[in-house]
Length: 116
Image 1 (tube, rainbow, N blue to C red):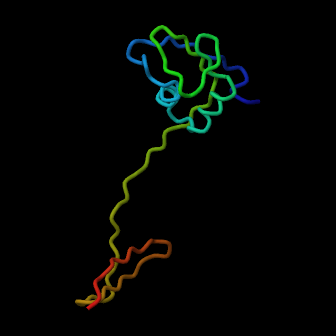
Image 2 (cartoon, rainbow, N blue to C red):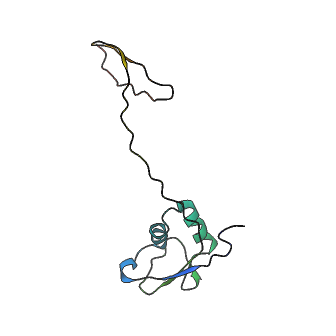
Image 3 (tube, rainbow, N blue to C red):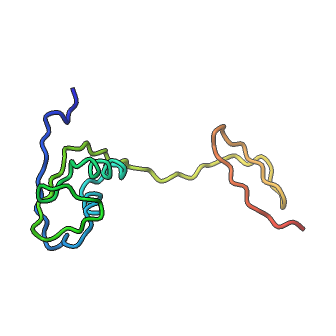
């Protein structure tokens, strides 16, 4: 069974700090991890309501507005690791050529050299 089947909509009150902000930008900041296409889909379908009325993505919020957020599944934040430097054995090196023994699947970046 879908874990959203029993979830309920959430009602939020817009404060002064979010007044004059577009509803689509408000939702994108509020629903981190939800794809932008999904946010626009729930806006178009009328699942997001402001003061119990449908709104378009360019609607500007006002202080005191009540926003209905439908139940949405928020993705988990992915922790990306920084690439680590590799120690590759050098097979040959001179002024014009560098040959290394690299494992399969490791990308190679070729610098552009001026032609002489």
